[in-house]
Length: 450
Image (cartoon, rainbow, N blue to C red; front, side, top):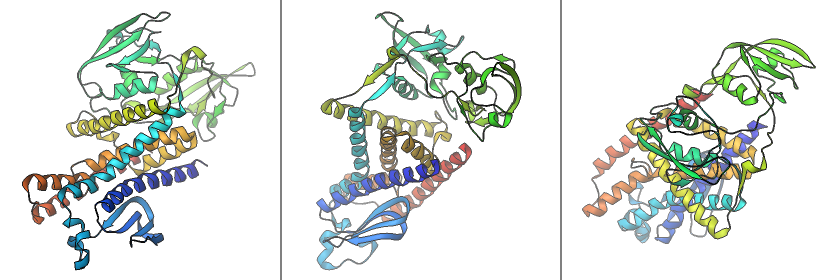
């Protein structure tokens, strides 16, 4: 079933985002009087094709990893004399810039729409209350204490842990002061703490902002009674059964489910003794733990769970917006995520972020499937982030991408004449090499996560 969700989610995600991107080019080209020869979603052999009244061929092709809009252009073939005015290369440079920029802009507009819908649908947020602070950590040095609620990070309000993490991600690889606005436990009093960062998580393969600060979110105490077991996991192979209560992992006594997670994190691929209680009897079972994650996030995998968790009502917050406020929130989220994406690219280039954070088609497929299986809200959120990533990627000033064409046209606008065909040809060759290199790196990262 999960494989079906992955295939379905990937096809829907790529289909929607590619169609919207190419429609941006198509719509503005038509407004500028350019004749569009073909609008293709996908590459390779056509599965469906039809023509409209203006002669444009619409194609749905077999390989859903992109698309293109082919316009009448003298550089790509002979153009009849009566159609020269409809040729892309004959249009003023300002119109060519508008046509090229319309694809990424369409992706940003789609993200705004999805974020607006999500804001009106609303969500239930867990209040970002600190559960514990690790001794000798950055958080401890700043004076953070259990029970404090994080109200804002660097001046940005945080209604849940997702917002806290997003603000922390912005500071990865940096040095300086991280400012936290806190509400003291059991009162309305507020205080400010400053966390001193020095090349914080610079180059980390899979950065974990909260953990690296030394903060553990508050969670309800959950008895380690197992209600979920992976049939292909180490626990099942060791003889663990539903209803067993974990008493110890190795020498570590277990009293709460969070302890299980903390202990396993330190034991990737280790052989451990599990002490469980079953029907009043104490049993010792030997288990060979698996591995999840990589780099700093590498940890042991047991393949057990405790099912759904009941949260106290006072620790939950309903966040919902009306149509107008939701539109503003959609714009705000899109703007902030766009800036974060551009900044992440910059940090990868200068070495502040590891290039192992770059993801390719395999990771996209896995996340698409998981978000589709989780529900409409999660899938819309994934589509929003992916649409922004696609828009940002295409705006990078790399020839063969929209951003590379925009760079050439902006230079032409300033100079009053285009760059020579030889210079543009060199640029295209460099651009193709860069794009292929990035795609290969992303694929290697994907394979490393399997």
